[in-house]
Length: 171
Image (cartoon, rainbow, N blue to C red; front, side):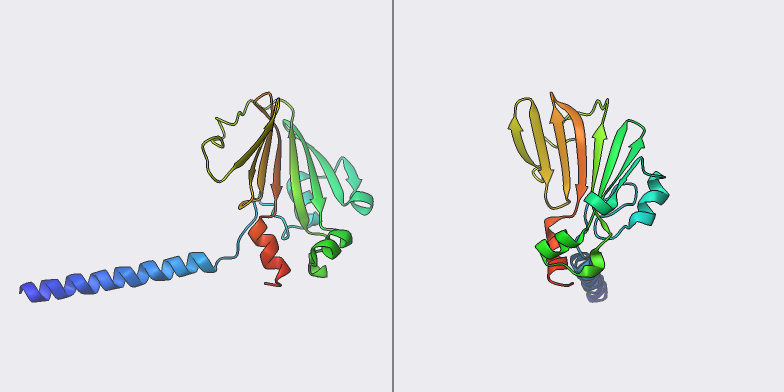
Protein backbone atom coordinates (compact mmCIF):
# COMPACT_ATOMS: atom_id res chain seq x y z
CA UNK A 1 0.00 0.00 0.00
CA UNK A 2 2.85 2.36 0.85
CA UNK A 3 4.38 1.90 -2.64
CA UNK A 4 1.07 2.79 -4.27
CA UNK A 5 0.78 5.99 -2.24
CA UNK A 6 4.44 6.78 -2.86
CA UNK A 7 3.93 6.24 -6.60
CA UNK A 8 0.96 8.61 -6.64
CA UNK A 9 2.96 11.24 -4.75
CA UNK A 10 5.78 11.01 -7.29
CA UNK A 11 3.29 11.23 -10.17
CA UNK A 12 1.68 14.33 -8.65
CA UNK A 13 5.11 15.86 -8.11
CA UNK A 14 6.06 15.20 -11.73
CA UNK A 15 2.80 16.71 -12.97
CA UNK A 16 3.34 19.77 -10.75
CA UNK A 17 6.90 20.13 -12.01
CA UNK A 18 5.78 19.89 -15.65
CA UNK A 19 2.99 22.43 -15.05
CA UNK A 20 5.44 24.82 -13.38
CA UNK A 21 7.94 24.43 -16.24
CA UNK A 22 5.20 25.11 -18.81
CA UNK A 23 4.07 28.22 -16.90
CA UNK A 24 7.67 29.51 -16.66
CA UNK A 25 8.18 28.92 -20.38
CA UNK A 26 4.95 30.80 -21.14
CA UNK A 27 6.13 33.78 -19.08
CA UNK A 28 9.53 33.82 -20.75
CA UNK A 29 8.01 33.62 -24.23
CA UNK A 30 5.86 36.72 -23.70
CA UNK A 31 7.33 39.74 -25.50
CA UNK A 32 8.52 42.54 -23.22
CA UNK A 33 5.86 45.21 -22.83
CA UNK A 34 6.19 48.91 -22.24
CA UNK A 35 4.52 50.86 -19.50
CA UNK A 36 0.96 51.59 -20.53
CA UNK A 37 -1.43 54.28 -19.35
CA UNK A 38 -5.21 53.99 -19.69
CA UNK A 39 -4.64 51.14 -22.15
CA UNK A 40 -2.38 53.25 -24.40
CA UNK A 41 0.90 51.51 -25.13
CA UNK A 42 4.06 52.58 -26.96
CA UNK A 43 4.61 50.96 -30.39
CA UNK A 44 1.05 49.60 -30.30
CA UNK A 45 -1.55 52.36 -29.89
CA UNK A 46 -2.34 54.79 -32.72
CA UNK A 47 -3.89 58.26 -32.91
CA UNK A 48 -7.44 56.86 -33.06
CA UNK A 49 -6.80 54.91 -29.83
CA UNK A 50 -5.45 58.03 -28.12
CA UNK A 51 -8.42 60.17 -29.16
CA UNK A 52 -10.86 57.44 -28.12
CA UNK A 53 -9.35 57.52 -24.61
CA UNK A 54 -8.53 61.24 -24.25
CA UNK A 55 -10.96 62.99 -26.60
CA UNK A 56 -10.13 65.83 -28.95
CA UNK A 57 -6.60 67.23 -28.56
CA UNK A 58 -6.19 70.80 -27.31
CA UNK A 59 -3.13 71.16 -29.55
CA UNK A 60 -2.37 69.12 -32.66
CA UNK A 61 1.30 69.29 -33.64
CA UNK A 62 1.41 65.84 -35.17
CA UNK A 63 2.61 67.00 -38.59
CA UNK A 64 5.28 69.38 -37.22
CA UNK A 65 6.53 67.68 -34.03
CA UNK A 66 4.76 64.33 -33.81
CA UNK A 67 2.72 65.35 -30.73
CA UNK A 68 -0.84 65.79 -29.54
CA UNK A 69 -1.71 67.60 -26.31
CA UNK A 70 -4.70 67.06 -24.06
CA UNK A 71 -6.07 68.59 -20.88
CA UNK A 72 -7.04 66.05 -18.24
CA UNK A 73 -8.19 66.25 -14.67
CA UNK A 74 -5.15 67.23 -12.62
CA UNK A 75 -2.93 68.38 -15.44
CA UNK A 76 -2.00 67.92 -19.08
CA UNK A 77 -0.92 65.05 -21.29
CA UNK A 78 1.41 65.17 -24.28
CA UNK A 79 1.48 62.11 -26.52
CA UNK A 80 4.53 61.68 -28.73
CA UNK A 81 4.25 59.51 -31.84
CA UNK A 82 6.83 57.53 -33.81
CA UNK A 83 8.04 59.70 -36.69
CA UNK A 84 10.02 58.79 -39.83
CA UNK A 85 13.07 60.49 -38.25
CA UNK A 86 12.83 58.24 -35.16
CA UNK A 87 12.40 55.17 -37.37
CA UNK A 88 15.55 56.07 -39.31
CA UNK A 89 17.58 56.84 -36.18
CA UNK A 90 16.62 53.59 -34.42
CA UNK A 91 16.49 51.44 -37.57
CA UNK A 92 12.88 50.40 -37.04
CA UNK A 93 10.21 49.04 -39.34
CA UNK A 94 8.29 51.78 -41.20
CA UNK A 95 5.08 50.05 -40.02
CA UNK A 96 5.64 51.64 -36.58
CA UNK A 97 5.18 55.18 -37.91
CA UNK A 98 2.21 56.82 -36.23
CA UNK A 99 2.18 54.59 -33.16
CA UNK A 100 2.57 56.05 -29.69
CA UNK A 101 6.19 56.60 -28.68
CA UNK A 102 5.77 58.18 -25.25
CA UNK A 103 3.05 59.59 -23.01
CA UNK A 104 3.99 62.46 -20.69
CA UNK A 105 1.67 63.46 -17.86
CA UNK A 106 2.27 66.87 -16.32
CA UNK A 107 0.75 66.92 -12.85
CA UNK A 108 -0.47 70.29 -11.56
CA UNK A 109 -1.23 69.56 -7.92
CA UNK A 110 -0.16 65.98 -7.27
CA UNK A 111 0.52 65.03 -3.67
CA UNK A 112 2.46 61.88 -4.56
CA UNK A 113 6.00 61.60 -3.21
CA UNK A 114 8.79 59.13 -3.97
CA UNK A 115 7.86 57.33 -0.76
CA UNK A 116 4.12 57.15 -1.53
CA UNK A 117 4.88 55.64 -4.95
CA UNK A 118 7.33 53.15 -3.36
CA UNK A 119 10.17 54.03 -5.73
CA UNK A 120 12.79 54.91 -3.09
CA UNK A 121 13.45 51.35 -1.95
CA UNK A 122 12.46 49.66 -5.22
CA UNK A 123 15.62 48.30 -6.86
CA UNK A 124 13.94 48.47 -10.31
CA UNK A 125 14.28 52.27 -10.19
CA UNK A 126 17.47 54.22 -10.75
CA UNK A 127 17.57 57.54 -8.88
CA UNK A 128 19.17 60.73 -10.17
CA UNK A 129 18.98 63.84 -8.04
CA UNK A 130 20.07 67.43 -8.23
CA UNK A 131 18.19 69.45 -5.63
CA UNK A 132 15.31 70.13 -5.80
CA UNK A 133 14.72 67.62 -8.66
CA UNK A 134 14.66 63.83 -8.26
CA UNK A 135 14.16 61.48 -11.21
CA UNK A 136 13.35 57.78 -10.79
CA UNK A 137 13.72 55.65 -13.93
CA UNK A 138 12.60 52.07 -14.48
CA UNK A 139 14.15 51.13 -17.83
CA UNK A 140 12.65 47.63 -17.70
CA UNK A 141 9.14 49.04 -17.80
CA UNK A 142 9.76 52.35 -19.57
CA UNK A 143 8.50 54.39 -16.63
CA UNK A 144 10.02 57.66 -15.35
CA UNK A 145 8.83 59.80 -12.43
CA UNK A 146 10.11 63.35 -11.91
CA UNK A 147 9.67 65.03 -8.53
CA UNK A 148 10.35 68.65 -7.61
CA UNK A 149 10.62 69.37 -3.91
CA UNK A 150 9.47 65.76 -3.33
CA UNK A 151 6.17 66.28 -5.21
CA UNK A 152 5.33 64.43 -8.43
CA UNK A 153 5.54 66.76 -11.44
CA UNK A 154 5.76 64.44 -14.46
CA UNK A 155 5.20 60.80 -15.27
CA UNK A 156 6.54 59.40 -18.53
CA UNK A 157 5.26 56.16 -20.03
CA UNK A 158 7.63 54.99 -22.71
CA UNK A 159 8.93 51.88 -24.40
CA UNK A 160 11.12 49.54 -22.38
CA UNK A 161 14.75 48.94 -23.34
CA UNK A 162 13.94 45.26 -24.01
CA UNK A 163 10.96 46.15 -26.16
CA UNK A 164 13.04 48.50 -28.32
CA UNK A 165 15.78 45.88 -28.72
CA UNK A 166 13.21 43.24 -29.71
CA UNK A 167 11.61 45.56 -32.28
CA UNK A 168 15.02 46.49 -33.69
CA UNK A 169 15.72 42.77 -34.19
CA UNK A 170 12.44 42.56 -36.11
CA UNK A 171 10.60 40.35 -33.62
